[in-house]
Length: 170
Image 1 (cartoon, rainbow, N blue to C red):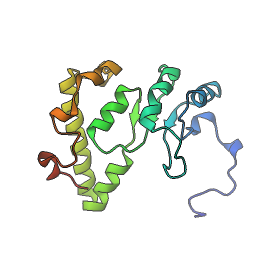
Image 2 (cartoon, helix red, strand yellow):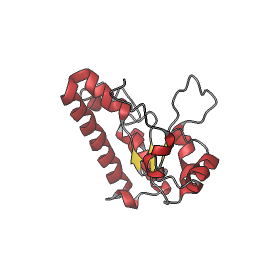
Image 3 (spheres, rainbow, N blue to C red):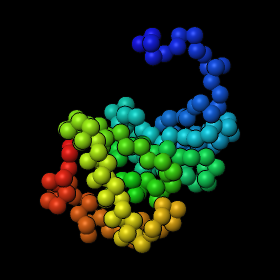
Image 4 (cartoon, one colour):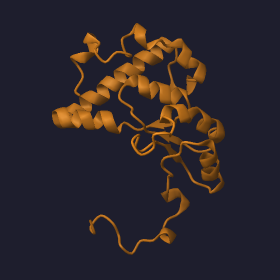
């Protein structure tokens, strides 16, 4: 591990732009991040087993976005598995959606090809949802956009959907 971490590095070596606070789930923490001059935040709940009372990241996102008001980027991570999850996160205020779980499932299933397939599936689902919502660019998405899309109409709310099941890599 010594080759990864510099033992001589201390917090005084870091600048504000080197840090992105993780696990922001409350608007007051968001305000503190802004007041301390941080350049971005990560909305994430690390473990549902240790934080049983913590809100789901998708539920916390809108109130955090209401505090940020576009001042700094919001990174969102929390159970993102399909295009619908990306769509919801962007509509509710995320600027960047992290795709750890789906990518790792693709990697575990089929290696590098699986990662590409996972990203392709998520991208196709996301583009379909954008078309159904009548938006051509992410900048056009608003919270009201979410009401325009009914995932059950296209099978994105069901894991067992046959059309997508044969293409899934996880």
